Image (cartoon, rainbow, N blue to C red; front, side, top):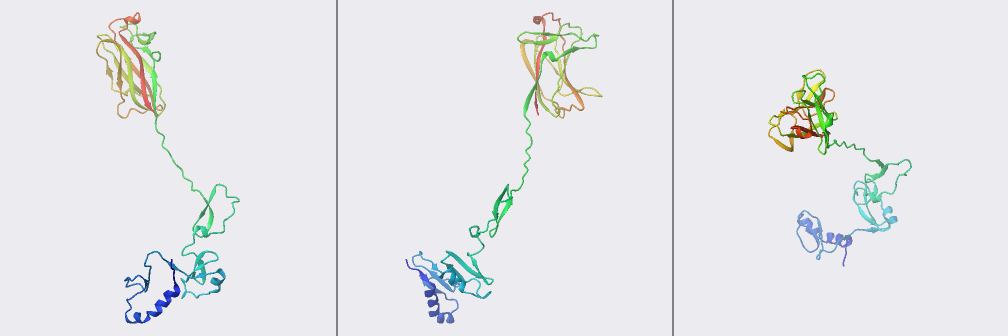
Length: 296
C-alpha cells in the first residue's frame, strides 16, 4: 500500500501556485480528482484505502523544535518514541489531539484515609470522590389482615332485666351463641379492638335464622363522651333456613378508619326469637361469629 507523504503534498502545492493565482476557488487534489471549492488541499485516495502520514519524530527531535505561539499553534507531529501525537499550543507541546484522556494520566493519589471512596477523573486529574448519599423513602404498603369475633366474645344485655344476663353458648362442632329466654334481655354485644389507624374493609356475619321473627345487626363506635354512631348500615335478617349463612357489610363513608383515641367499638345483635332455647336444637336465632377484614 502506498502512503502519501507531506513532501509530495508540499511539492504539489508549489507546482500549482500559478493555478491558485489565476483562480482562488480551485483546489489542489492528490489522488482522484474531485471538486471541493472551499478546500485548499484535498487528499483523495483512488482506492479509498490510504491515509496521511504526519511527520514522525523521536522525542529528542520533537523537543528540539521550538515553534512560536500563537503563530504556529496547531503544529502536529507523531512522537515515535512515546507512540503519541503531540500538538503545539501556548508555547508548549501537548500530548494527544485534544483534551487529555484518562489513560494519559499518570499521577494517582494514595489510598490512605480514603475508605468508602472511589477513584474518579475529570479527564486531566485523578482524585478520590465520595459516593453521593441518597435516601430512598419507601411508603409502607398496607397489608390485608383479619380479626375474628367469636361467640365467647359476646355478652347479653338489656334494660328489662336487672342482671342483664340471658345469653347462652351451645358448644359443639359449630359453637354458637343465642339468648335463652325470648322475653328477657335479648341483645348480644361484643367489643372489638383493632390497631389504631387500621382501615376496615368489610365485616362478615355468620348466622342462622330459622324463625319467623328476624334479628338486627349493627356495628357501632361510641365517643367516650357522646352517643353511639353506626359504622355500617344497620341490617335485619330475613328468611327461614337451618343452614349457616353469611351477611357481608362495608363501612359507611369516612367511618372505616379506627381511631382508638376518640372511640370504643362494638358489635350489637338484637335477637328476637319466637321461642325459648332450652337446648341447641331449639335455638332459632344463632350467631357463629364475625370476621373483620382490615388493612394496616
